[in-house]
Amino acid sequence: MNITTEFLDKHNVSGPRYTSYPPANFFHTKFTSKDYIEQLIASNDQQPENISLYIHIPFCPQRCHFCGCNTETGQKKSVLERYIQAVKQEIRNVSSHLNVTTRKVTQIHWGGGTPNAIAMHYIEDIMNLIKERFIIDPHAEIAIECSPAYLEFAHIDQMAAMGFNRMSLGIQDFREDVLKVVNRQAPKHPVKEIVDYLRSKGFSGINLDFIYGLPLQTLESVSDTIAKAIEIKPDRIVTFSYAHVPWVKEEQLKLEKIGLPQPKDKMQMLIQNIKQLQDAGYVAIGIDHFAHPDDQLTKAFMSNRLHRNFQGYCTLETTGQVYAFGSSSISQLWGAYAQNHKNINNYMDAIASTGFAIERGYTMTLGQQVVRSVINSIMCNGLLLFEEIAAQFAMSVAEIKEIVQYDASKLADFEKDNLISISAEGIKISNSGRMIARNIAMAFDPDLKQGDTIYSKTV
Ligand code: SF4
Image (cartoon, rainbow, N blue to C red):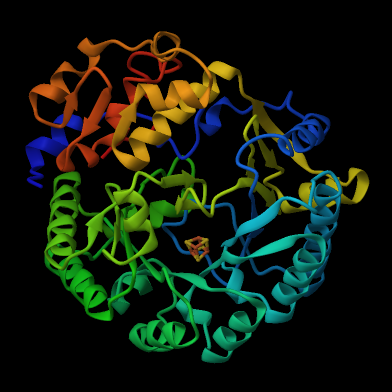
């Protein structure tokens, strides 16, 4: 894979991230809890039959200055306890509309915030309720995002006993001076010891997250950090590009005052990360996601069974329709998206008064469901077979092409640069083309307006 600055420059345009299609900016407040309940009931007869659960914990002991999430610090114990009760109530209410006797849970994901910074008994309390209300598939992936700053080995024992078998650790950088200027605590224990301990307890798919583009980072220091990560041998490594949006998150101005790497330096960091990780044998799943060849994600990618939701990449086998709980969380059903109130007080009040807390959402048309399948296929598996999509929707290939407004001339530039190959069956994306899968997917998005600049850059 030959990725150069010129290559990234050429393809660095504004575009949706396609963690969902249509993107979250389509969600609107006319979609209410009543619509959500209708969609919950409908989802019992839709695909996939499997159930994925997402639990959102919007609390952190302190706020990282680069953070773009909805999270709160310094919450009182009484607020946390009320929040846990609200999440439990929401689980009871949602599950009462689902066919939980035949549909199995194949994926549970805890995200935040910092889920492991709350006392383990709260996590156990919610997990016990989930086990009481749902049938958990014996091969379910049960994952939690953790900050190593608050992670004890005893917590891992407790989580393993609760059934957790996947963990994602937010490292961001191994340099303590970088962590200090971004207001983040360093890991409490050596990360290698944590990863080894997780393996000894049966965890797999262990992921380490990093960010490049932070103050004090240089090409050399990022390279050292990635080299250290490779030595630890996690199953997955993600290297996020820091998104500087101080007009949305004012806290980020603090980083600007210290000084941020220039865009051209960030591109060099990305190119270097890709090379280093590939030289070490990791497979590029997406522009910033890498997995070991033995990892389930790599195997799914190799067999065109990779999928993606708001929680990240996953396999088609374990992903179900996503039912999300907690403030700001987004449910991803076959027919609709539904997002809860972002403000935790509004969320808890809504659950207390009506049992549901939908702030906005979106009901998809059949055409949009088709486009979603096409875009997922491109983004996750680097492949689009028109016959396959047509069979999925019991439509003709001509109908599918009409829905996505297929126009080969929109792809001519990609083909000329050997980023895709076009045949009568569809398109196949090359290794280099995978780095700009977002750009290629945009050619199949009929809702995208020319020159749309509300989105972040694709590289
Ligand atoms: S730990 Fe994560 S969610 Fe919390 S402030 Fe830092 S980046 Fe944001």
